Length: 457
Ligand SMILES: Cc1cc2nc3c(=O)[nH]c(=O)nc-3n(C[C@H](O)[C@H](O)[C@H](O)COP(=O)(O)OP(=O)(O)OC[C@H]3O[C@@H](n4cnc5c(N)ncnc54)[C@H](O)[C@@H]3O)c2cc1C
Ligand SMILES: NC(=O)c1ccc[n+]([C@@H]2O[C@H](COP(=O)([O-])OP(=O)(O)OC[C@H]3O[C@@H](n4cnc5c(N)ncnc54)[C@H](O)[C@@H]3O)[C@@H](O)[C@H]2O)c1
Image 1 (cartoon, helix red, strand yellow):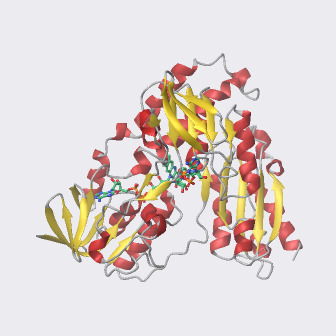
Image 2: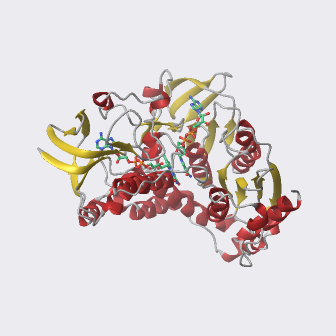
Image 3: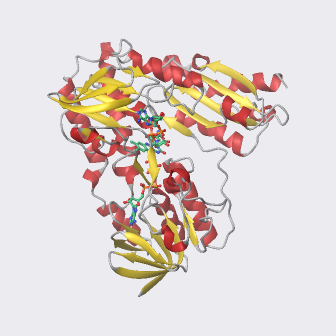
């Protein structure tokens, strides 16, 4: 039986940071992957979705009054969609992971193609061959949750995987089930291309974990692009229809769809990996519980990173946890701190947030100081023709430290990192306000609320 110091199950975003960080160390590393080396993000999730959103926005600039005069017209929707798909396919290398696999092996790690399952402590089975491990790292990701809905099997349904790999024509009638980040980004994307889009959202608002006014801003944006958003609504039945499928809601409304997009959340992929052989049961929702060092609770020599842990399921969280695990495996005791993990939804404007919302601060027993500024305080917004939005900052009333930020505005996914640093480093507003921003940048919008918070203490 081959034996490695470290065996990683799943070659996703988190795993990559483990094997690259351990490159050059004395540890032998094997990575088992049953699908694509690189996981979802570069092939089926973050990268293709942001690439398609970018193409759609460039195409739509030609009918934006701000820019229309610079264009002689625009290609029809069909051609724009085809070009968007073609560009996406170039960016994701047609979902060919050869370069990623070569990169992995260049670090000295061994790639094993197949499905891994733990059979007993210290041993995993890969399609009938046992390999031994000293330390095991789980990076098995997450899978879309399929709503339990009569008739759903009889209508055309895409998960985001199909939406991000389909080369077929733009769907004319789209019904999105779920109004979280995936649902909002895909609804916005297809609406930009002129599809008739409906979002059926079970919760009473879109992106319900964010500030209510962020949900309201997202609702207005989608409305402005012709999307029919139905909060507090469930689809109760699906049936085939000549256009594709027909959906009936609990309010009795009926929607026809050429494709139904399932965006009702994701579940950690923990059930097929053989955790029971270690005496470990996943927690509620399927997440594998980890401690501050990313060790799986209840198991020896087993670590987990990424979506399977159920902690802030973003690529950047997986990267961070991968670094934490690699540092620990290399003998440098390291603990993860999740207070400053940014969240973003890549519509235009972008929603970006980090740390507490007002509701989560109150749940934690903090009544924060708050300050808000409109994005127009940054002159850059008029230069870029993106005046929409606002920034709200929260500070701890006793320490003065920044504890939360929510922004709706241009490039917010970039400059929110400044708030992330302030939160992680517990920087008091009296210090944070002294950061001078280059003019003219969107990031200048941080200055007024920071000065206001400092004044209010
Ligand atoms: C449409 C969409 C857009 C997104 N956009 C963003 C974004 O813009 N920014 C962002 O930060 N996040 C985004 N996310 C979330 C992001 O994609 C995930 O958080 C990230 O991919 C998680 O990485 P991971 O390492 O946990 O798992 P993955 O990348 O899913 O990797 C897990 C790997 O494990 C393999 N595997 C599973 N079980 C086994 C087994 N038993 N044996 C062998 N191999 C196995 C799988 O084949 C897979 O390759 C998006 C998600 C979606 C769905
Ligand atoms: N830009 C980004 O960073 C980005 C983009 C996309 C996804 N992601 C990550 O991927 C994860 C999955 O995103 P998601 O949007 O699929 O999940 P989510 O859990 O955030 O949202 C799913 C939404 O679907 C609704 N819902 C659930 N069941 C329903 C039903 N039967 N009918 C109608 N509505 C229903 C819920 O109310 C919820 O608001 C998220 O945690 C997110 O952080 C990140």
